[in-house]
Length: 524
Ligand code: BG6
View 1 (cartoon, rainbow, N blue to C red):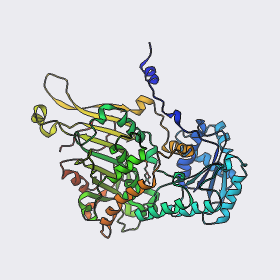
View 2: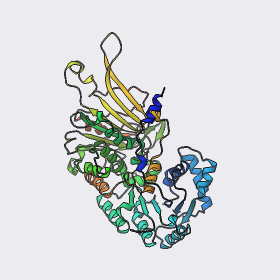
View 3: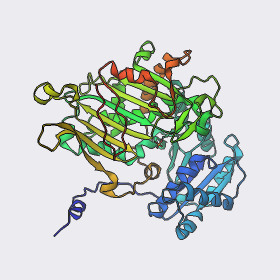
View 4: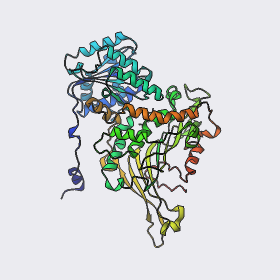
C-alpha cells in the first residue's frame, strides 16, 4: 500500500524546471568585515555550496578597509560559520573546497586605486566568465551605495551592456531615508546600470513563509473566495521583537521602527496578503498596484491613525533591559520610535472598508511575526444571539516566524452533556509537515540574484511607493516630543494608545501565542 507521505510526494507540482541556471561567476562583497557578511551572507553562500547549488566554477571576494589576507579572512569566516550558520558547524571537506574560492581585497570605497586592484584580482581569474559575470553585494553604509556603483562603473567592472557576460548589484536596505533620497539614489544607480541589473533586497521576501502567502492564497480555492470585504472584518500584521536595539543604536537613531520595519518588510507582507491574483502579470506589478491603492495618511491625521512608542527600562526574557534612551549611541533625549502601530485602508474594490492594522516594535514580550485575518462574525441569530460577543469570530493566522505555520480558528462544541462552545484550532505546522529544515532567506535571495531572477527583489517604483506612504507619517511626528503615553515598559506589548487605536473601531490586538498554549479570546 502507498503511504500518504508517498502519495503527497507524487502530487508535488514541480515549478522550478524553468528556473534559470547559475552560470560561473565571481561574487564581490563590499562590507566584508561587517556583521551581515559574517552572520548571513557567508553562511548562506556556504550552504548553497554544500547543497551543490552554486556553479562548478565561482569565486567570492571580500572587499573592506581592514587589513587582512586571504588566509586570515578565511579563518574568520570559518569561525563565523560555526557561530552563525544554521548548521552551526563546518564540514571539513566542503569547507576546504569552499574556502579555496574565497579571496580578500583590502580597499576603500572612495579610492579609485582600490577598484583598479579589485579589477586586477578579478582579471586574474582568466578571460572567461569568472571575470565577466560579476555579482556585487553592497553590505555597506547606504551613504556609500552610489559612490561604490560609480567606482565600479569607472573601473569598468560594471557595464550597462557587456557582450561577454553580466554584472549585477545587490543593494541592502535602507534604500534611501525618504522618497526624495530614494529617488535620488535610484537616479544615481541607474546612471551606471540598467534597472534589471539592480537587485534591491528585502530579506522578508526570501522567507519561506512569506513566499508561501502567494501559494496559499492562489492555489487554494476555498480561501481566496473569502479574501475580501465580504468576509473579512480586518487584518492584523504583527512583527514583534523581544530584543532592544543593543549595539545598533547609531543606525537606529537614523531609522526608527517606521523606516526600519514598516517601510519595507511589513508593507511587503501586506502587499502579498492583499494584492490581486497574478494572472499573466509579474508579481511586482501587482504589489505596486496594491501599495499605490493604500490611502496615504496625511500629516494632520497621523495622531488618529498612527501610534508611536519608545521603550523604557524593563525586563526582557528575565533579564533587565535598559531604556532605549540609555542604549549605547542613542541620544539621551531621543524621540526616535522603537514601536509603531498604524491603521491603513486600501482603496480598491476588494478591500474597501477593511482596516489593516500593522504594528512592530523592539523590547516587546516575544519575537513573533504573524498575519491575522479576522473574519466577520456570524449573523446575530442562533448561537451568536445567545453568546453575544463571547462567540469568537473565525480567524486565520499565518505565522511567519517562529512556529512557522497557519492556524484556522473556529468554534466547536465542548464534549459533554451540556451545550458549551469554545474556540478550537486547525494547525498546519512546517515542522510537522516538512521537518525542521528551512533554508535561510539569504540563500534563496542570493541564488535568485545569481540566476538573474528579480521577482523577489524590490523594483524602483515599489520602493518609492512605500516611501510615499511613510513620509507623511514622519512629517506628522516632526518637532513633536514623545508624550508620557507614548512610552512603554520593555517587556510589555507597546504603548496604551496602540490598544485605543483598535478599540475605537471595536477591535483588539491578538497577541501571538506560543503554539502549545490555548489562546483566549480578547473580549471586544
Ligand atoms: C532588519 C531590521 O531588516 O530586520 C532589524 O533592520 C530587524 O532591526 C530585522 O531586527 C528582523 O529580521 P528577522 O528576519 O529577524 O525578522
